[in-house]
Length: 193
Image: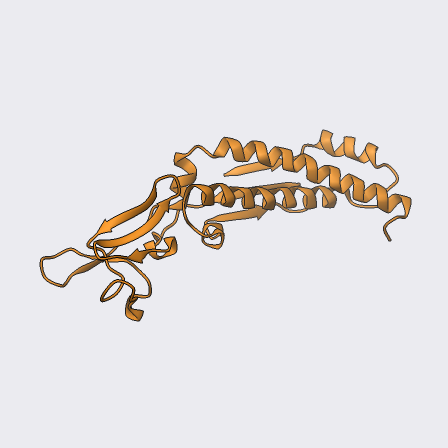
């Protein structure tokens, strides 16, 4: 969980800087913090996507931005552990004669799951299985077991991406505050209605 917050001294310094603007500074700081948190969320998703072969939309389901109220300019990025494990189908698996291949880790290449299947034969995906990858656990045809993929939150934790994310969030927060100051000064000068 990552948190960014402004204290009263920062708010007072910003009020002095843009003195004549008729606006609520807490609202402007709230906008800046929220934008910085959203950009940090996108950066976390990008970092995880570089490491594992998931799509960004799937990763963003695990990352949430919780905004504070407008009186306190805070935002919290919550990276939640998945209660439901991801199926291997999110990693673009392909069935071969030996089993099923999927690119779970971008640095390792394709991983072969011996004896795993997605349909009756290679190249044919069973609609009933919905693109998931299964493996037989018994000696007979049944039972079959769903093969699970690694959790994207574990990828974030195991590769110690938190320090990179915190430094990115701090830089982004400074940029967003500067952008809000430029907006307010342009508004004060009458360039923006």
